[in-house]
Image (cartoon, rainbow, N blue to C red; front, side):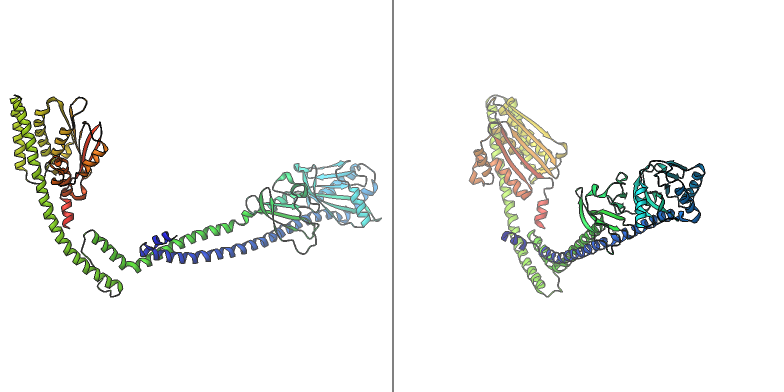
Length: 612
Protein backbone atom coordinates (compact mmCIF):
# COMPACT_ATOMS: atom_id res chain seq x y z
CA UNK A 1 0.00 0.00 0.00
CA UNK A 2 2.86 2.31 0.85
CA UNK A 3 4.51 1.55 -2.49
CA UNK A 4 1.30 2.32 -4.37
CA UNK A 5 0.89 5.60 -2.51
CA UNK A 6 4.39 6.58 -3.52
CA UNK A 7 3.55 5.80 -7.14
CA UNK A 8 0.45 8.00 -6.91
CA UNK A 9 2.50 10.77 -5.35
CA UNK A 10 4.84 10.73 -8.34
CA UNK A 11 2.04 11.07 -10.89
CA UNK A 12 1.68 14.36 -12.80
CA UNK A 13 -0.24 17.04 -10.93
CA UNK A 14 -2.95 17.20 -13.63
CA UNK A 15 -3.63 13.47 -13.20
CA UNK A 16 -3.97 13.74 -9.45
CA UNK A 17 -6.27 16.75 -9.60
CA UNK A 18 -8.38 15.14 -12.33
CA UNK A 19 -8.74 11.91 -10.35
CA UNK A 20 -9.67 13.72 -7.12
CA UNK A 21 -12.23 16.00 -8.80
CA UNK A 22 -13.69 13.11 -10.81
CA UNK A 23 -13.92 10.78 -7.81
CA UNK A 24 -15.72 13.42 -5.74
CA UNK A 25 -18.25 14.31 -8.44
CA UNK A 26 -18.79 10.68 -9.47
CA UNK A 27 -19.49 9.74 -5.84
CA UNK A 28 -22.14 12.46 -5.65
CA UNK A 29 -23.74 11.43 -8.98
CA UNK A 30 -23.79 7.72 -8.12
CA UNK A 31 -25.22 8.34 -4.61
CA UNK A 32 -28.01 10.56 -5.92
CA UNK A 33 -28.77 8.10 -8.75
CA UNK A 34 -28.96 5.09 -6.41
CA UNK A 35 -31.27 6.96 -4.04
CA UNK A 36 -33.49 8.13 -6.93
CA UNK A 37 -33.68 4.65 -8.48
CA UNK A 38 -34.47 3.02 -5.14
CA UNK A 39 -37.25 5.51 -4.48
CA UNK A 40 -38.61 5.17 -8.01
CA UNK A 41 -38.53 1.36 -7.84
CA UNK A 42 -40.43 1.29 -4.56
CA UNK A 43 -43.05 3.76 -5.84
CA UNK A 44 -43.43 1.89 -9.14
CA UNK A 45 -43.87 -1.49 -7.49
CA UNK A 46 -46.44 -0.01 -5.11
CA UNK A 47 -48.39 1.53 -8.00
CA UNK A 48 -48.24 -1.69 -10.02
CA UNK A 49 -49.58 -3.71 -7.07
CA UNK A 50 -52.46 -1.25 -6.77
CA UNK A 51 -53.08 -1.02 -10.51
CA UNK A 52 -53.51 -4.75 -11.24
CA UNK A 53 -56.41 -5.26 -8.79
CA UNK A 54 -58.15 -2.27 -10.36
CA UNK A 55 -57.85 -3.84 -13.81
CA UNK A 56 -59.15 -7.15 -12.49
CA UNK A 57 -62.11 -5.34 -10.91
CA UNK A 58 -63.01 -3.79 -14.26
CA UNK A 59 -62.77 -7.16 -16.00
CA UNK A 60 -64.98 -8.71 -13.33
CA UNK A 61 -67.59 -6.03 -13.91
CA UNK A 62 -67.64 -6.87 -17.61
CA UNK A 63 -68.09 -10.53 -16.71
CA UNK A 64 -70.96 -9.58 -14.41
CA UNK A 65 -72.64 -7.73 -17.27
CA UNK A 66 -72.28 -10.75 -19.53
CA UNK A 67 -73.71 -13.11 -16.90
CA UNK A 68 -76.50 -10.64 -16.20
CA UNK A 69 -77.29 -10.66 -19.92
CA UNK A 70 -77.62 -14.44 -19.83
CA UNK A 71 -79.87 -14.17 -16.78
CA UNK A 72 -81.95 -11.59 -18.61
CA UNK A 73 -82.31 -14.00 -21.54
CA UNK A 74 -83.43 -16.75 -19.19
CA UNK A 75 -86.01 -14.47 -17.54
CA UNK A 76 -87.47 -13.39 -20.84
CA UNK A 77 -89.55 -16.54 -20.64
CA UNK A 78 -91.49 -14.98 -17.81
CA UNK A 79 -93.65 -13.13 -20.35
CA UNK A 80 -97.31 -14.05 -19.69
CA UNK A 81 -98.08 -16.04 -22.86
CA UNK A 82 -94.84 -17.98 -23.00
CA UNK A 83 -94.82 -18.67 -19.31
CA UNK A 84 -98.36 -20.03 -19.34
CA UNK A 85 -97.62 -22.28 -22.31
CA UNK A 86 -94.53 -23.75 -20.61
CA UNK A 87 -96.37 -24.28 -17.34
CA UNK A 88 -99.27 -25.98 -19.20
CA UNK A 89 -96.90 -28.32 -21.01
CA UNK A 90 -95.14 -29.23 -17.80
CA UNK A 91 -98.39 -29.87 -15.91
CA UNK A 92 -100.10 -31.77 -18.73
CA UNK A 93 -97.12 -34.06 -19.40
CA UNK A 94 -95.57 -34.61 -15.99
CA UNK A 95 -94.37 -38.09 -16.79
CA UNK A 96 -94.14 -37.98 -20.59
CA UNK A 97 -90.87 -38.51 -22.37
CA UNK A 98 -91.82 -35.89 -24.97
CA UNK A 99 -94.71 -33.67 -26.00
CA UNK A 100 -97.09 -33.96 -28.88
CA UNK A 101 -96.31 -32.40 -32.22
CA UNK A 102 -98.38 -29.35 -31.39
CA UNK A 103 -96.71 -29.02 -28.01
CA UNK A 104 -93.30 -29.42 -29.60
CA UNK A 105 -94.04 -26.73 -32.19
CA UNK A 106 -95.24 -24.33 -29.51
CA UNK A 107 -92.26 -25.07 -27.25
CA UNK A 108 -89.84 -24.65 -30.13
CA UNK A 109 -91.31 -21.25 -30.96
CA UNK A 110 -91.00 -20.09 -27.35
CA UNK A 111 -87.36 -21.20 -27.04
CA UNK A 112 -86.49 -19.86 -30.51
CA UNK A 113 -87.77 -16.45 -29.41
CA UNK A 114 -85.40 -16.56 -26.43
CA UNK A 115 -82.44 -17.27 -28.72
CA UNK A 116 -83.42 -14.58 -31.22
CA UNK A 117 -83.63 -11.81 -28.65
CA UNK A 118 -80.09 -12.55 -27.45
CA UNK A 119 -76.98 -10.99 -29.00
CA UNK A 120 -75.99 -14.20 -30.69
CA UNK A 121 -74.04 -15.43 -27.68
CA UNK A 122 -76.48 -18.24 -26.75
CA UNK A 123 -75.48 -21.73 -27.82
CA UNK A 124 -78.81 -23.33 -26.92
CA UNK A 125 -81.80 -23.20 -24.57
CA UNK A 126 -83.06 -26.36 -22.79
CA UNK A 127 -86.47 -26.88 -21.16
CA UNK A 128 -86.70 -29.73 -18.62
CA UNK A 129 -89.91 -31.53 -17.75
CA UNK A 130 -90.43 -32.95 -14.26
CA UNK A 131 -90.01 -36.40 -15.82
CA UNK A 132 -86.41 -35.61 -16.73
CA UNK A 133 -87.09 -35.31 -20.44
CA UNK A 134 -85.81 -32.16 -22.06
CA UNK A 135 -86.21 -30.22 -25.26
CA UNK A 136 -83.01 -28.66 -26.62
CA UNK A 137 -83.32 -25.70 -28.94
CA UNK A 138 -80.17 -24.46 -30.71
CA UNK A 139 -79.71 -22.13 -33.68
CA UNK A 140 -79.75 -25.09 -36.03
CA UNK A 141 -83.04 -26.53 -34.64
CA UNK A 142 -84.56 -28.40 -31.73
CA UNK A 143 -84.93 -31.97 -30.48
CA UNK A 144 -86.25 -34.01 -27.54
CA UNK A 145 -83.78 -35.80 -25.32
CA UNK A 146 -84.66 -38.39 -22.69
CA UNK A 147 -81.31 -38.52 -20.91
CA UNK A 148 -79.25 -35.48 -20.00
CA UNK A 149 -76.09 -34.82 -18.09
CA UNK A 150 -77.92 -32.20 -16.02
CA UNK A 151 -80.33 -33.40 -13.33
CA UNK A 152 -83.07 -30.77 -12.99
CA UNK A 153 -84.70 -32.69 -10.17
CA UNK A 154 -82.20 -31.42 -7.65
CA UNK A 155 -82.68 -27.85 -8.80
CA UNK A 156 -86.47 -28.23 -8.77
CA UNK A 157 -86.51 -29.71 -5.29
CA UNK A 158 -84.13 -27.05 -3.99
CA UNK A 159 -86.12 -24.24 -5.47
CA UNK A 160 -89.37 -25.71 -4.10
CA UNK A 161 -88.00 -26.17 -0.64
CA UNK A 162 -86.49 -22.72 -0.50
CA UNK A 163 -89.50 -21.21 -2.22
CA UNK A 164 -87.14 -19.24 -4.44
CA UNK A 165 -87.75 -18.90 -8.14
CA UNK A 166 -84.82 -16.69 -9.12
CA UNK A 167 -82.29 -17.86 -11.75
CA UNK A 168 -79.26 -19.88 -10.64
CA UNK A 169 -75.80 -19.42 -12.16
CA UNK A 170 -74.32 -22.90 -12.63
CA UNK A 171 -71.06 -21.58 -14.06
CA UNK A 172 -68.98 -23.55 -16.55
CA UNK A 173 -70.57 -26.80 -17.76
CA UNK A 174 -69.48 -29.32 -20.35
CA UNK A 175 -71.55 -30.98 -23.04
CA UNK A 176 -72.17 -31.36 -26.75
CA UNK A 177 -73.32 -27.84 -27.56
CA UNK A 178 -73.93 -26.30 -30.97
CA UNK A 179 -71.12 -25.07 -33.21
CA UNK A 180 -68.79 -27.71 -31.79
CA UNK A 181 -68.46 -26.07 -28.38
CA UNK A 182 -67.54 -28.34 -25.49
CA UNK A 183 -68.09 -25.81 -22.70
CA UNK A 184 -70.69 -23.16 -21.97
CA UNK A 185 -71.74 -20.78 -19.21
CA UNK A 186 -75.04 -22.09 -17.88
CA UNK A 187 -77.97 -20.28 -16.20
CA UNK A 188 -81.02 -22.18 -14.82
CA UNK A 189 -84.39 -20.43 -14.52
CA UNK A 190 -87.19 -22.32 -12.66
CA UNK A 191 -90.73 -22.32 -14.20
CA UNK A 192 -93.09 -21.75 -11.27
CA UNK A 193 -96.49 -23.44 -10.94
CA UNK A 194 -98.89 -20.53 -10.81
CA UNK A 195 -101.76 -22.65 -9.44
CA UNK A 196 -99.84 -24.41 -6.76
CA UNK A 197 -96.71 -23.50 -4.99
CA UNK A 198 -93.76 -25.37 -6.54
CA UNK A 199 -91.66 -25.76 -9.67
CA UNK A 200 -93.32 -26.96 -12.84
CA UNK A 201 -90.13 -27.14 -14.92
CA UNK A 202 -86.64 -25.73 -15.49
CA UNK A 203 -85.27 -23.55 -18.29
CA UNK A 204 -81.47 -23.78 -18.88
CA UNK A 205 -79.69 -21.09 -20.91
CA UNK A 206 -76.16 -22.00 -22.16
CA UNK A 207 -74.04 -19.04 -23.21
CA UNK A 208 -70.96 -19.09 -25.43
CA UNK A 209 -67.41 -18.53 -24.12
CA UNK A 210 -66.60 -16.38 -27.16
CA UNK A 211 -67.56 -13.06 -25.46
CA UNK A 212 -65.34 -14.02 -22.52
CA UNK A 213 -62.40 -14.71 -24.85
CA UNK A 214 -62.98 -11.41 -26.69
CA UNK A 215 -63.16 -9.64 -23.36
CA UNK A 216 -59.86 -11.11 -22.20
CA UNK A 217 -57.98 -10.69 -25.52
CA UNK A 218 -56.93 -7.02 -24.96
CA UNK A 219 -55.75 -7.84 -21.45
CA UNK A 220 -51.96 -8.24 -21.72
CA UNK A 221 -49.55 -8.07 -18.80
CA UNK A 222 -46.54 -9.16 -20.84
CA UNK A 223 -44.92 -12.43 -21.85
CA UNK A 224 -45.86 -15.57 -19.90
CA UNK A 225 -48.59 -13.71 -18.02
CA UNK A 226 -51.62 -15.80 -17.01
CA UNK A 227 -55.15 -14.53 -16.41
CA UNK A 228 -57.92 -16.92 -15.37
CA UNK A 229 -61.67 -16.67 -14.72
CA UNK A 230 -63.11 -19.02 -12.12
CA UNK A 231 -66.80 -19.62 -11.45
CA UNK A 232 -68.30 -19.81 -7.98
CA UNK A 233 -67.42 -23.55 -7.81
CA UNK A 234 -63.73 -22.95 -8.52
CA UNK A 235 -63.83 -24.28 -12.07
CA UNK A 236 -61.84 -22.53 -14.77
CA UNK A 237 -64.04 -20.59 -17.19
CA UNK A 238 -61.20 -18.91 -19.08
CA UNK A 239 -57.52 -19.81 -19.38
CA UNK A 240 -54.71 -18.98 -21.85
CA UNK A 241 -54.46 -22.78 -22.21
CA UNK A 242 -57.80 -23.97 -23.59
CA UNK A 243 -57.08 -27.46 -22.28
CA UNK A 244 -57.51 -26.18 -18.71
CA UNK A 245 -61.10 -24.89 -19.20
CA UNK A 246 -63.61 -26.74 -17.03
CA UNK A 247 -60.98 -28.16 -14.65
CA UNK A 248 -60.71 -27.53 -10.94
CA UNK A 249 -58.35 -24.68 -10.00
CA UNK A 250 -57.10 -26.32 -6.82
CA UNK A 251 -56.29 -29.56 -8.63
CA UNK A 252 -54.12 -27.75 -11.20
CA UNK A 253 -52.23 -25.13 -9.24
CA UNK A 254 -52.58 -25.86 -5.51
CA UNK A 255 -52.71 -22.12 -4.88
CA UNK A 256 -55.09 -20.96 -2.19
CA UNK A 257 -57.40 -18.20 -3.37
CA UNK A 258 -59.76 -18.08 -0.41
CA UNK A 259 -63.33 -18.96 0.30
CA UNK A 260 -66.42 -17.49 -1.18
CA UNK A 261 -65.56 -13.82 -1.09
CA UNK A 262 -68.81 -12.63 -2.71
CA UNK A 263 -69.92 -9.62 -0.80
CA UNK A 264 -66.47 -8.90 0.60
CA UNK A 265 -65.68 -5.22 0.77
CA UNK A 266 -61.91 -5.46 0.29
CA UNK A 267 -59.78 -7.79 -1.80
CA UNK A 268 -56.62 -9.28 -0.32
CA UNK A 269 -53.40 -7.60 -1.32
CA UNK A 270 -51.33 -9.00 -4.19
CA UNK A 271 -48.65 -11.44 -3.14
CA UNK A 272 -45.65 -13.12 -4.70
CA UNK A 273 -45.80 -16.85 -5.46
CA UNK A 274 -43.41 -19.25 -7.13
CA UNK A 275 -44.68 -21.56 -9.85
CA UNK A 276 -42.57 -23.75 -12.13
CA UNK A 277 -39.35 -22.10 -10.97
CA UNK A 278 -40.73 -18.67 -11.92
CA UNK A 279 -41.68 -15.87 -9.56
CA UNK A 280 -45.16 -14.42 -10.17
CA UNK A 281 -47.17 -11.56 -8.73
CA UNK A 282 -50.46 -13.24 -7.72
CA UNK A 283 -53.63 -11.17 -7.50
CA UNK A 284 -57.37 -11.86 -7.81
CA UNK A 285 -60.71 -10.11 -7.63
CA UNK A 286 -64.05 -11.63 -6.56
CA UNK A 287 -67.37 -10.55 -8.04
CA UNK A 288 -69.75 -9.18 -5.43
CA UNK A 289 -72.72 -10.53 -7.44
CA UNK A 290 -71.75 -13.96 -8.75
CA UNK A 291 -68.78 -14.94 -6.59
CA UNK A 292 -66.69 -15.46 -9.74
CA UNK A 293 -62.99 -14.64 -9.52
CA UNK A 294 -60.56 -13.06 -11.95
CA UNK A 295 -57.05 -14.38 -11.18
CA UNK A 296 -53.87 -12.84 -12.57
CA UNK A 297 -50.37 -14.30 -12.35
CA UNK A 298 -47.78 -11.95 -13.80
CA UNK A 299 -44.04 -12.77 -13.93
CA UNK A 300 -42.10 -10.43 -11.69
CA UNK A 301 -39.79 -9.68 -14.59
CA UNK A 302 -42.69 -8.20 -16.58
CA UNK A 303 -43.60 -5.88 -13.73
CA UNK A 304 -40.02 -4.73 -13.52
CA UNK A 305 -39.70 -4.25 -17.28
CA UNK A 306 -40.40 -0.54 -17.09
CA UNK A 307 -38.16 -0.22 -14.05
CA UNK A 308 -35.39 -2.04 -15.92
CA UNK A 309 -35.81 0.30 -18.89
CA UNK A 310 -35.60 3.30 -16.57
CA UNK A 311 -32.55 1.78 -14.93
CA UNK A 312 -30.96 1.23 -18.34
CA UNK A 313 -31.63 4.81 -19.45
CA UNK A 314 -30.49 6.09 -16.09
CA UNK A 315 -27.37 3.95 -16.35
CA UNK A 316 -26.49 5.46 -19.71
CA UNK A 317 -27.22 8.91 -18.30
CA UNK A 318 -24.92 8.20 -15.37
CA UNK A 319 -22.20 6.99 -17.74
CA UNK A 320 -22.61 10.16 -19.81
CA UNK A 321 -22.55 12.22 -16.62
CA UNK A 322 -19.40 10.45 -15.45
CA UNK A 323 -17.71 11.03 -18.81
CA UNK A 324 -18.75 14.68 -18.71
CA UNK A 325 -17.51 14.93 -15.14
CA UNK A 326 -14.16 13.41 -16.05
CA UNK A 327 -13.88 15.73 -19.05
CA UNK A 328 -14.67 18.81 -16.95
CA UNK A 329 -12.28 17.64 -14.22
CA UNK A 330 -9.49 17.17 -16.74
CA UNK A 331 -10.29 20.54 -18.33
CA UNK A 332 -10.22 22.34 -14.99
CA UNK A 333 -7.07 20.50 -13.91
CA UNK A 334 -5.34 21.37 -17.16
CA UNK A 335 -6.24 25.01 -16.67
CA UNK A 336 -4.86 25.03 -13.14
CA UNK A 337 -1.62 23.25 -14.05
CA UNK A 338 -1.07 24.81 -17.49
CA UNK A 339 1.91 26.95 -16.48
CA UNK A 340 3.46 24.15 -14.44
CA UNK A 341 3.18 21.80 -17.40
CA UNK A 342 4.75 24.41 -19.68
CA UNK A 343 7.66 24.69 -17.28
CA UNK A 344 7.93 20.89 -17.16
CA UNK A 345 8.05 20.65 -20.96
CA UNK A 346 10.80 23.26 -21.10
CA UNK A 347 12.75 21.35 -18.47
CA UNK A 348 12.41 18.22 -20.64
CA UNK A 349 13.61 20.22 -23.66
CA UNK A 350 16.58 21.34 -21.61
CA UNK A 351 17.49 17.67 -21.15
CA UNK A 352 17.52 17.39 -24.97
CA UNK A 353 19.95 20.35 -25.28
CA UNK A 354 17.20 22.81 -26.26
CA UNK A 355 18.08 25.88 -24.24
CA UNK A 356 15.54 28.34 -25.63
CA UNK A 357 13.17 29.02 -22.71
CA UNK A 358 9.95 31.08 -22.95
CA UNK A 359 8.07 32.26 -19.86
CA UNK A 360 4.88 34.15 -19.14
CA UNK A 361 6.23 37.58 -18.23
CA UNK A 362 2.88 38.67 -16.86
CA UNK A 363 2.87 36.19 -13.99
CA UNK A 364 4.32 37.28 -10.65
CA UNK A 365 3.11 34.41 -8.47
CA UNK A 366 5.15 31.42 -7.30
CA UNK A 367 5.05 29.82 -10.78
CA UNK A 368 6.25 33.07 -12.43
CA UNK A 369 9.20 33.41 -10.04
CA UNK A 370 10.09 29.76 -10.57
CA UNK A 371 9.97 30.20 -14.37
CA UNK A 372 12.29 33.24 -14.33
CA UNK A 373 14.81 31.46 -12.10
CA UNK A 374 14.65 28.45 -14.39
CA UNK A 375 15.33 30.61 -17.47
CA UNK A 376 18.41 32.19 -15.87
CA UNK A 377 19.71 28.77 -14.93
CA UNK A 378 19.17 27.42 -18.47
CA UNK A 379 21.12 30.35 -19.98
CA UNK A 380 24.09 29.65 -17.70
CA UNK A 381 23.92 25.93 -18.56
CA UNK A 382 23.81 26.76 -22.27
CA UNK A 383 27.03 28.79 -22.00
CA UNK A 384 28.79 25.96 -20.20
CA UNK A 385 27.53 23.31 -22.64
CA UNK A 386 28.73 25.29 -25.66
CA UNK A 387 32.22 25.51 -24.18
CA UNK A 388 32.28 21.79 -23.37
CA UNK A 389 30.93 20.87 -26.83
CA UNK A 390 33.52 22.98 -28.58
CA UNK A 391 36.35 21.30 -26.67
CA UNK A 392 34.84 17.86 -27.30
CA UNK A 393 34.55 18.40 -31.07
CA UNK A 394 38.20 19.43 -31.25
CA UNK A 395 39.22 16.35 -29.29
CA UNK A 396 37.10 14.01 -31.43
CA UNK A 397 38.54 15.40 -34.66
CA UNK A 398 42.05 14.78 -33.36
CA UNK A 399 41.16 11.21 -32.34
CA UNK A 400 39.67 10.42 -35.76
CA UNK A 401 42.74 11.64 -37.58
CA UNK A 402 44.88 9.57 -35.22
CA UNK A 403 42.87 6.41 -35.90
CA UNK A 404 43.07 6.90 -39.66
CA UNK A 405 46.82 7.28 -39.45
CA UNK A 406 47.03 3.93 -37.60
CA UNK A 407 45.65 2.01 -40.59
CA UNK A 408 48.20 3.03 -43.17
CA UNK A 409 51.38 1.58 -41.57
CA UNK A 410 49.58 -1.58 -40.53
CA UNK A 411 48.12 -2.19 -44.00
CA UNK A 412 51.34 -1.23 -45.85
CA UNK A 413 53.36 -3.65 -43.79
CA UNK A 414 51.02 -6.56 -44.60
CA UNK A 415 50.81 -5.73 -48.32
CA UNK A 416 54.59 -5.35 -48.84
CA UNK A 417 55.25 -8.54 -46.95
CA UNK A 418 52.94 -10.52 -49.28
CA UNK A 419 54.52 -8.98 -52.42
CA UNK A 420 57.97 -9.86 -51.10
CA UNK A 421 57.01 -13.47 -50.43
CA UNK A 422 55.47 -13.79 -53.91
CA UNK A 423 58.55 -12.37 -55.65
CA UNK A 424 60.79 -14.61 -53.59
CA UNK A 425 58.84 -17.66 -54.75
CA UNK A 426 59.48 -16.70 -58.39
CA UNK A 427 55.89 -15.71 -59.33
CA UNK A 428 56.84 -12.56 -61.18
CA UNK A 429 53.52 -12.02 -62.98
CA UNK A 430 51.65 -12.35 -59.72
CA UNK A 431 54.15 -10.00 -58.14
CA UNK A 432 53.46 -7.46 -60.87
CA UNK A 433 49.69 -7.73 -60.36
CA UNK A 434 50.18 -7.28 -56.63
CA UNK A 435 52.30 -4.16 -57.12
CA UNK A 436 49.71 -2.69 -59.50
CA UNK A 437 46.94 -3.28 -56.97
CA UNK A 438 49.13 -1.84 -54.22
CA UNK A 439 49.65 1.25 -56.36
CA UNK A 440 45.87 1.64 -56.74
CA UNK A 441 45.52 1.33 -52.98
CA UNK A 442 48.13 4.01 -52.32
CA UNK A 443 46.57 6.29 -54.91
CA UNK A 444 43.15 5.72 -53.30
CA UNK A 445 44.54 6.67 -49.93
CA UNK A 446 46.25 9.76 -51.27
CA UNK A 447 43.12 11.01 -53.09
CA UNK A 448 40.61 10.46 -50.25
CA UNK A 449 41.53 12.56 -47.28
CA UNK A 450 37.91 13.11 -46.28
CA UNK A 451 36.17 10.97 -43.67
CA UNK A 452 33.42 9.58 -45.97
CA UNK A 453 33.50 7.86 -49.38
CA UNK A 454 30.88 6.05 -51.46
CA UNK A 455 30.29 2.34 -51.03
CA UNK A 456 31.33 1.83 -54.65
CA UNK A 457 34.77 3.31 -53.92
CA UNK A 458 35.17 1.18 -50.80
CA UNK A 459 34.21 -1.97 -52.79
CA UNK A 460 36.87 -1.10 -55.40
CA UNK A 461 39.41 -0.81 -52.57
CA UNK A 462 38.44 -4.27 -51.31
CA UNK A 463 38.84 -5.77 -54.80
CA UNK A 464 42.42 -4.46 -54.99
CA UNK A 465 43.02 -5.78 -51.48
CA UNK A 466 41.82 -9.24 -52.51
CA UNK A 467 44.24 -9.25 -55.48
CA UNK A 468 47.10 -8.71 -53.03
CA UNK A 469 45.74 -11.35 -50.61
CA UNK A 470 45.44 -13.80 -53.53
CA UNK A 471 49.25 -13.70 -53.80
CA UNK A 472 49.43 -15.37 -50.42
CA UNK A 473 46.53 -17.82 -50.42
CA UNK A 474 46.05 -18.58 -54.10
CA UNK A 475 43.01 -20.74 -54.84
CA UNK A 476 42.46 -21.37 -51.14
CA UNK A 477 40.96 -17.88 -50.85
CA UNK A 478 37.29 -17.75 -51.92
CA UNK A 479 35.39 -14.47 -51.53
CA UNK A 480 31.71 -13.89 -52.34
CA UNK A 481 30.18 -10.41 -52.41
CA UNK A 482 26.43 -9.80 -52.01
CA UNK A 483 25.95 -6.08 -52.54
CA UNK A 484 22.64 -4.48 -53.43
CA UNK A 485 22.90 -1.97 -56.31
CA UNK A 486 20.96 0.64 -54.29
CA UNK A 487 23.68 0.81 -51.64
CA UNK A 488 26.60 1.57 -53.99
CA UNK A 489 26.03 5.35 -54.01
CA UNK A 490 25.58 5.65 -50.25
CA UNK A 491 28.43 7.07 -48.18
CA UNK A 492 30.31 5.28 -45.41
CA UNK A 493 33.50 6.08 -43.46
CA UNK A 494 36.69 5.59 -45.42
CA UNK A 495 38.60 2.32 -44.69
CA UNK A 496 35.72 0.90 -42.57
CA UNK A 497 35.26 -2.41 -44.50
CA UNK A 498 38.86 -3.08 -45.53
CA UNK A 499 40.12 -3.84 -41.98
CA UNK A 500 37.20 -6.25 -41.45
CA UNK A 501 37.99 -8.15 -44.66
CA UNK A 502 41.69 -8.26 -43.81
CA UNK A 503 40.90 -9.55 -40.31
CA UNK A 504 38.57 -12.26 -41.73
CA UNK A 505 41.27 -13.43 -44.14
CA UNK A 506 43.84 -13.52 -41.36
CA UNK A 507 41.72 -15.53 -38.89
CA UNK A 508 39.24 -17.29 -41.21
CA UNK A 509 41.32 -20.27 -42.37
CA UNK A 510 39.23 -23.45 -42.02
CA UNK A 511 40.73 -25.99 -39.61
CA UNK A 512 39.41 -28.82 -41.85
CA UNK A 513 40.60 -28.07 -45.41
CA UNK A 514 42.67 -24.90 -44.74
CA UNK A 515 40.59 -22.85 -47.20
CA UNK A 516 39.56 -19.26 -46.51
CA UNK A 517 35.92 -18.66 -47.36
CA UNK A 518 34.78 -15.03 -46.92
CA UNK A 519 31.26 -13.58 -47.45
CA UNK A 520 30.73 -9.81 -47.72
CA UNK A 521 27.16 -8.46 -47.59
CA UNK A 522 25.93 -4.87 -47.95
CA UNK A 523 22.27 -3.77 -48.18
CA UNK A 524 19.90 -0.92 -47.33
CA UNK A 525 17.73 -1.40 -44.25
CA UNK A 526 15.41 1.61 -44.04
CA UNK A 527 17.54 4.63 -43.12
CA UNK A 528 20.58 2.46 -42.40
CA UNK A 529 23.28 0.57 -44.31
CA UNK A 530 23.54 -2.97 -42.97
CA UNK A 531 26.82 -4.78 -43.61
CA UNK A 532 28.60 -7.93 -42.48
CA UNK A 533 31.85 -9.82 -43.11
CA UNK A 534 31.73 -13.54 -42.23
CA UNK A 535 34.31 -16.32 -42.34
CA UNK A 536 34.29 -20.08 -41.74
CA UNK A 537 37.38 -20.18 -39.57
CA UNK A 538 37.85 -21.86 -36.20
CA UNK A 539 35.74 -19.20 -34.44
CA UNK A 540 36.14 -18.21 -30.80
CA UNK A 541 35.01 -19.55 -27.48
CA UNK A 542 32.72 -17.53 -25.25
CA UNK A 543 35.64 -16.37 -23.11
CA UNK A 544 37.66 -15.32 -26.17
CA UNK A 545 34.70 -13.44 -27.63
CA UNK A 546 34.14 -11.56 -24.35
CA UNK A 547 37.83 -10.62 -24.30
CA UNK A 548 37.71 -9.32 -27.91
CA UNK A 549 34.54 -7.29 -27.24
CA UNK A 550 36.09 -5.82 -24.11
CA UNK A 551 39.14 -4.66 -26.11
CA UNK A 552 37.16 -2.89 -28.85
CA UNK A 553 37.07 0.41 -26.95
CA UNK A 554 40.65 0.34 -25.64
CA UNK A 555 43.14 2.84 -26.94
CA UNK A 556 45.95 1.95 -29.30
CA UNK A 557 48.52 1.87 -26.47
CA UNK A 558 46.30 -0.34 -24.26
CA UNK A 559 45.52 -3.02 -26.89
CA UNK A 560 48.82 -3.08 -28.80
CA UNK A 561 49.39 -3.34 -32.53
CA UNK A 562 47.67 -6.72 -32.82
CA UNK A 563 44.25 -5.25 -31.99
CA UNK A 564 44.22 -2.26 -34.30
CA UNK A 565 41.80 -3.51 -37.02
CA UNK A 566 38.48 -4.24 -35.29
CA UNK A 567 38.95 -1.71 -32.47
CA UNK A 568 39.84 0.98 -35.00
CA UNK A 569 36.60 0.43 -36.96
CA UNK A 570 34.48 0.23 -33.82
CA UNK A 571 35.88 3.45 -32.36
CA UNK A 572 35.61 5.36 -35.64
CA UNK A 573 31.92 4.40 -35.99
CA UNK A 574 31.28 5.53 -32.43
CA UNK A 575 33.07 8.86 -32.89
CA UNK A 576 31.50 9.62 -36.29
CA UNK A 577 27.91 8.55 -35.53
CA UNK A 578 27.60 8.73 -31.77
CA UNK A 579 24.81 6.45 -30.57
CA UNK A 580 23.30 6.02 -34.03
CA UNK A 581 25.94 3.58 -35.28
CA UNK A 582 26.17 -0.12 -34.40
CA UNK A 583 29.10 -2.57 -34.38
CA UNK A 584 29.04 -6.16 -33.14
CA UNK A 585 31.09 -9.37 -33.28
CA UNK A 586 29.48 -12.81 -33.05
CA UNK A 587 31.37 -16.06 -33.11
CA UNK A 588 30.95 -19.75 -32.35
CA UNK A 589 33.81 -22.09 -31.76
CA UNK A 590 34.23 -24.43 -34.73
CA UNK A 591 31.68 -22.53 -36.89
CA UNK A 592 33.31 -19.20 -37.76
CA UNK A 593 32.96 -15.50 -36.99
CA UNK A 594 30.71 -12.74 -38.32
CA UNK A 595 31.34 -9.02 -37.88
CA UNK A 596 28.28 -6.84 -38.55
CA UNK A 597 27.68 -3.11 -38.54
CA UNK A 598 24.80 -0.67 -39.01
CA UNK A 599 25.51 2.84 -40.34
CA UNK A 600 23.03 5.70 -40.89
CA UNK A 601 22.51 6.65 -44.54
CA UNK A 602 22.76 10.35 -43.57
CA UNK A 603 26.16 10.69 -41.88
CA UNK A 604 25.75 14.44 -41.17
CA UNK A 605 22.59 14.09 -39.07
CA UNK A 606 24.55 13.48 -35.88
CA UNK A 607 26.58 16.63 -36.44
CA UNK A 608 23.46 18.71 -37.08
CA UNK A 609 21.80 17.44 -33.90
CA UNK A 610 24.93 18.16 -31.90
CA UNK A 611 25.16 21.68 -33.30
CA UNK A 612 21.51 22.41 -32.47
